[in-house]
Image (tube, rainbow, N blue to C red; front, side, top):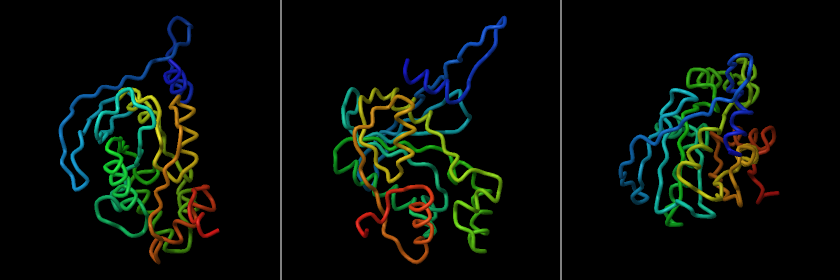
Length: 224
């Protein structure tokens, strides 16, 4: 009930019937589960449908997580350029690979893959933002110039997926304190953070420094 109330309040999903305002409970269904062998071992891929959007969100699950505490969880937002093409402009592909390694080493855990490309602005706008960055803007200013927020990602679906998988508490694989805060608002018991810091290089160091300075990501802390 806490999770439902949090999501309903956050998304404003309401209907009016005979003058009464009621919350509409979002629905999520785990439609398919299938084994996926990877270089990090075998996972079970869970395919979800939902009533909040029409996107194909999935979860890669390793081991038995139902009813478990301190489950390593990575909530990874889609990055076509980094995850698929191996782009060096960001650290997304490296974070995805590192998270799967961490889960494999732990022997259990979850990687939730959310379809919210470009911090929620979509692939087209992200590529336009890249061009603006090449003209001198940073990743935050480019998004704002295009009429978007610096970060438009939303984690209600992820919270519902964790509830569906019956996870009791999580150790979140992230450098982003806002992600922890948002999940806690949605009723997820986040008991710890696991850093996932990729190596900075010439192609992504400006991007990473902007995330640390303007978005409070916990990066470069060992060098302070």
